[in-house]
Length: 381
Ligand SMILES: Cc1cc2nc3c(=O)[nH]c(=O)nc-3n(C[C@H](O)[C@H](O)[C@H](O)COP(=O)(O)OP(=O)(O)OC[C@H]3O[C@@H](n4cnc5c(N)ncnc54)[C@H](O)[C@@H]3O)c2cc1C
Image (cartoon, rainbow, N blue to C red; front, top):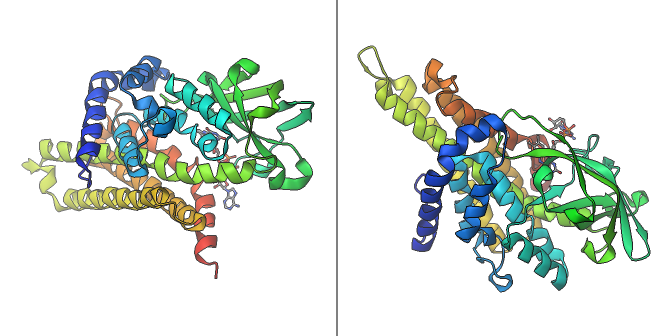
């Protein structure tokens, strides 16, 4: 990763993760990009190092890291493979909605499962309900002390391999967003998986359909109150906008490092291409974008850590998400340009970095939706 202000402990942690990734993940990146498989053995080894507890408070047996440390860990993941880093950290942060809104029993349950290596996913999107969340059709009907879940979610990261599903469904459609509720649904209750997506990038992260066909969920698995699901998942989305986007800063830094290396080695017109001002300016612009993204997101992480007012955090999270994802797209695309024809070839790493980056402008709310969130917030008088 590039230079960032870190405490000694943070630097030690990031170095530990860096060395682990270089040894265990880097040699597997090309294979995972080809096969579209999540390397579960690497996931398990990270558990042995203690990383499964990265998002879990110390009182529940986790690491109790602050949000800036959580940023730094994710950026380091993004340096090696955004797909693996996204899936791994998403699974760990899947516990955070429960930690914030769940009962004591629910908190203990999810923390224990995550610490023991469970994969978690968030099920919001449906075929006709992406940006317009309230257009979803999944329902949870209360019968006695159970809810009966019916519906199909699509594009769910970790969906095909998850052990626990965090699911949004209507308990009362007539109330619109106030009729949506959140459930914690262990796979063993009868969750099925459907289509496995074949993606442009982020291929080590598996994405697919999740099907609920009369799945009986005990009432005690309702997280928060009935009708509060939308509000609670939005709060989690704000955190994800800051922390998941950290991953793509690492990817952009990786692309910049590759471009600088190549600019030193490749010669045209009798001199390394770094000596051409056209290339130097491009590299300087890339450096500015990476540093600005890092600092915007770390500012957001600091706001999260200090429990800043909700409207302030959500505005900053939306803006930082848009800025950093678009900056990374520019940086990774320019890295391909610096490498010329070789940059376009799979033999060199930068084309994959560009493919991995695009999704960060689409999920966690598209960049159009995030601009709306920020625009509305800053124009409120
Ligand atoms: C790889 C991947 C992983 C994903 N992981 C998950 C996951 O784990 N869980 C989950 O629930 N979902 C997940 N998603 C779904 C993702 O969040 C949605 O794809 C995203 O919210 C956009 O929804 P949509 O695809 O239906 O696009 P649409 O909502 O149909 O939007 C289409 C276009 O219209 C624009 N648009 C829509 N409304 C407006 C508006 N009001 N003003 C201006 N522009 C607008 C959008 O920005 C977009 O450009 C994932 C998607 C992908 C591709």
